[in-house]
Figure (spheres, rainbow, N blue to C red):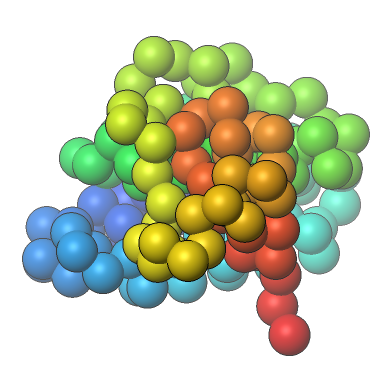
Length: 130
């Protein structure tokens, strides 16, 4: 699955009203992409991230998509695609997807630098599976 496919699914989720206030559905798509990316070959990883995904309609999700791709590319030594640096791929103000005040300090401290750079603040294990 390419990141553009994930963006289209999140776009549909937003259009249906499922992702505006509760990000669980969108987050599941991001987790699935993470799993697929980690299980792929280096050439497949490049293919999965190369094409710019459409903007989904909410800047926090656009920032999460770009930040996640940068993060995964850095982890697996794949060149991050240029679209991740587009101005529309940054959350303003910062976004805490968990939306739990008790986790904000932890997310500020632990968020991977690529996500933090895009204004998306998550805990260290946000993209881990148990």
